[in-house]
Length: 161
Image 1: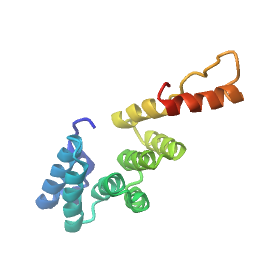
Image 2 (image 1 turned 180 degrees about the vertical axis):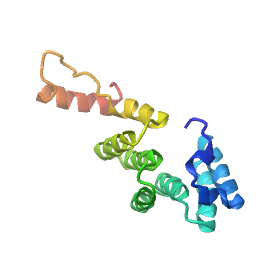
Image 3 (image 1 turned 120 degrees about the vertical axis):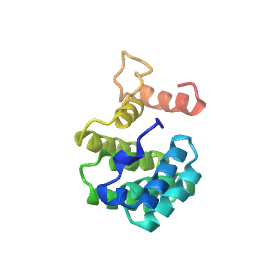
């Protein structure tokens, strides 16, 4: 993850609580450093102070990533998205959860939904990395030809593609 300004994700109501803002900022710093478990602790504390949509969204991602509770994480992200439908970060976190579970089509749909609500650098980067398909093995055959499909799957499992 890139370095991000945690305050931009919080609503004005959460900015009135300095303790919630501090915990959210600590969680974002841990998440940016790759410490998902440490970030989850801070997001849980911030959510306990006040259920802020941004806290719920990032907590959902952390729970899915660290504990493997994807349904619970998606429920948190959907609740955050219902509260702030124009915030693309909630769609980004939903896409990350779908990628954790291996559901690439749902992740792409969530990323495209988030991209429709505004420019976001992380969404664009994730869309580029997830959404690009490799060229077919045999370019003279159609992509859906059985040789391209099954040889591509075999090579991907062997780590050669």
